[in-house]
Length: 138
Image 1: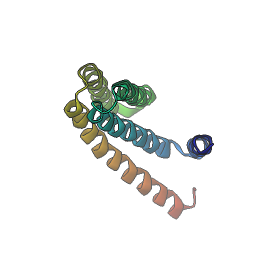
Image 2: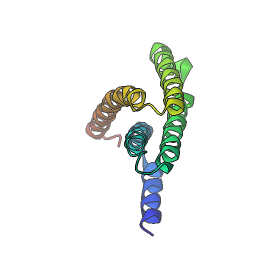
Image 3: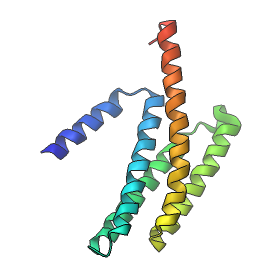
């Protein structure tokens, strides 16, 4: 039952989030899945099924990266959108290779980049929200 409560809470959180908050939530999902994959690969000798679970976590992270990529507005986003598109392509390819090789190191490389960008998005979203609150638009 607690899984259902958690899932319902997460759905409500996403449903009421503004676009900036949604991006932050997606990044958090990527981080969570990549951290899980690293742990599961490390625990594979304890339970071989952990490799399958790790693969599923990596695939979920890849899907979330694809969602970010598909949400890019390449016309309005200019060079930033183009750069992010290339970065997201790299992450997806690297994670696909990491999944085949079950490489914790390759996953960690992407995870480090994702965390850096997640922090930037969270700071930008917080700043935008503060600005909106000051101007009374929120």
